Image (cartoon, rainbow, N blue to C red):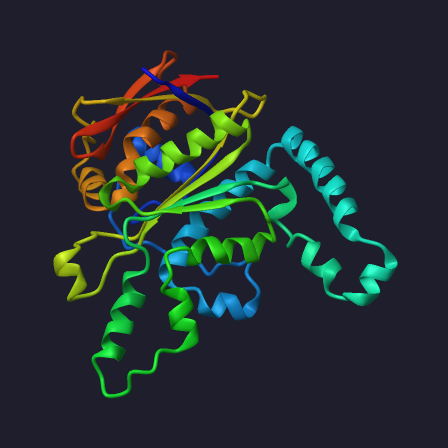
Length: 314
């Protein structure tokens, strides 16, 4: 059986009652109680003002998780030094000659990373969502059903499934590849497998961002997502001093794991990206030293198959 492996370098989480990874980890390991309050959606601070104003909830939830993971990555000194060297080399190769800069005065600014996100070097991404921006779809349908059927350009470009990925590339000015997936309730599992496949084949780091935003009525009645939730995992091909854990992933026909807390289990069942919660619980237990050995988890994927994940301490 094929085993796909990677090392976890950083984590970001945002959801109802889950403000960030440290507080989520405490809740998942039972060190703090879970209070199901609405998800707080901060504005994407790294976006330019015009794009920030256009950022819809699905973009905000994706950014909230991804930005936390990137902050966690930057907080690791050894990795920051390595990536600073890579960024310097990349900047030198992109700077161009004085003649090129004179003919294209915006070249330097386009190649300069925005503070706080892209200084880690090129980072391929996988964005996975079961349905994208339901609120925007609803508003487009309302407009099309009205007498004035004109759709604004902003609303149209926010309607595409890769909008969060596009905004992320604007914020980071990162030219690395970005895959954007949709696999209905299997979207987190599909995104994880895609990221792992890239890592195994390319030997690179990849950030997986899985996210959902709840739908308004009448869409909610046919696609009842229970909350807005996002998770980001930075995964690497090799172990380093900053590694949090190792993941070994295979396909299985075993039943998916559930969560003991009723509120968390309702979130896991009600939001496809929250299928990640059993995996996050295993990572939280290892980080706190609650267990020393490998932790086995079965993550919900397709109706006829799941993902068996072995989480090993490093």
